[in-house]
View 1: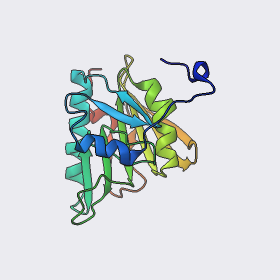
View 2: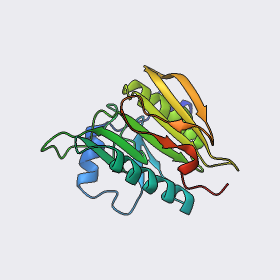
View 3: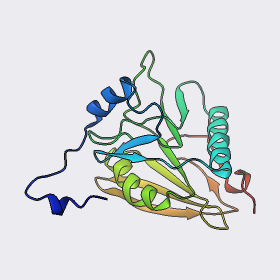
Length: 190
């Protein structure tokens, strides 16, 4: 990657979200999987079978447990900050009648991390915290065991609290009353 210090006194020109959205609308990235993170276009790795299966399963499970006042999306843009438009694996927000825009607020965001654990922890968690997303889950499938890192209490630079859940625990999103997902129910080879 290009080291910005080597360009001094010149700098790197980053994109803002509205510029990125215009480029997307023009079809600039039709054959690419990219997301805007901190003004930089970041490529996304192809999804493996476990990643896709878990993401789809979570979307279906949340849709069944929530009513139509909620919008549950899979792999869709989230208008997080002026310089970031990530595409979380799962997002839950309040449905806005008649709106076709990407959500700018969310009640729950989920990333399934197979090869992206570092990015999900170090880049996306601060973006989601700054966006005041009340709860963010990283479902870590990078090792032998399924581990879920539940981030709550958002701050300007991340989350104040991170709890780790495993088999035997139940996920209960703070802003989604009545939703309960047993970690053991998540499709994963144990």
